[in-house]
Length: 425
Image (cartoon, rainbow, N blue to C red; front, side):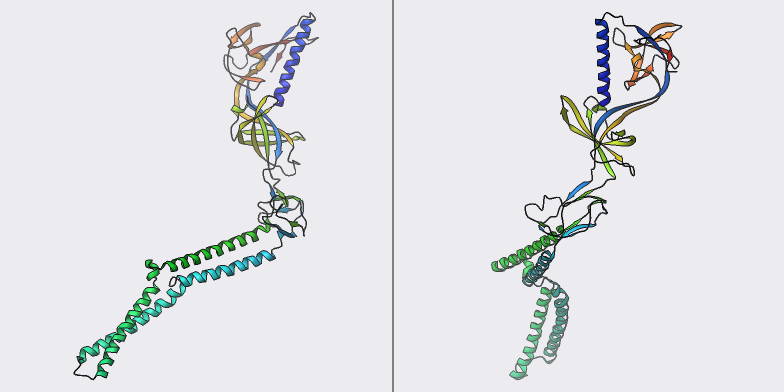
């Protein structure tokens, strides 16, 4: 952009000189320059002006209110990711966490009592006990049946006392077996709870216990989250830029979320946020190489690449620009600082070993086709050419000329100039 402005100024001044000379009735003398056509490399670039910035710049705050208990860093300190930078007094927060843990345990136990046998105790104790009980009951029943079958129990053979004793033994064995099987079913969770056969009061009681357990869990989660927010850690490796708090300071509900406690930057990563003229932006692509120069450090030259192209335009004094972002490596000890002005030449095309002539040598014939004047046998002839790309100073010749040809450039003669001469050899 700066180069374009300078070029426009030069052209304007040249026009003013010509007008002045014509007004004074002076004759403008034209001299001829001879330039030999040669091969070379041609690089096309567009200019983008802007300022350096630090993309990794984090203004850190605490997530809750409280009193600052410890500041572990000072301005200029280098820190690593995860390092504790500062912390609030966590005495009351730790108490809230412990209380929430107890409340959750109580609510969980209440829920387990209502949902028996769906707990650990049922499976580890009731199932093995029930299996053993079933085996014992089945054995007693088998023995009672064997007695009745062998003796052929009847009313006439035994007294009432003997009859009822045998009958009770048989009935008791049968009842024990039924109870043992029922206990086993509950041990496996195959009871009325599993089948969904519950009274309405049981359903509401169970739901209330479930909600109580969920509420206790949420309270515990929030308490742990608040405890984590009371400790500030570095989100990345970097340097402490500012520390805007002291130990003992209190953070109120009005400022704890907005007040910057510590600012952390990564000086090893920088970007250039620049603007490109609307005429040049169509040629800019992501990943294109760029040569960056910094106004404050004229001897430093950086190499970067285009990482972002913004679609929305900006307007300055009636001129439309588009923002681009360029990344680059920061040399050790370079002295680069955020906010410095810089210019990037974004390379949009490069030609190697092509025929080149000064752009001033290319003219147009009456039909608007490109032509150049060529010196042949000390005579000037006009020759049509096919041109390629141009950087404003040199133009690629695709056809019509050969290496070694001599082109003629006409320009205004300087006072005392004899004209002529072969340039570009």
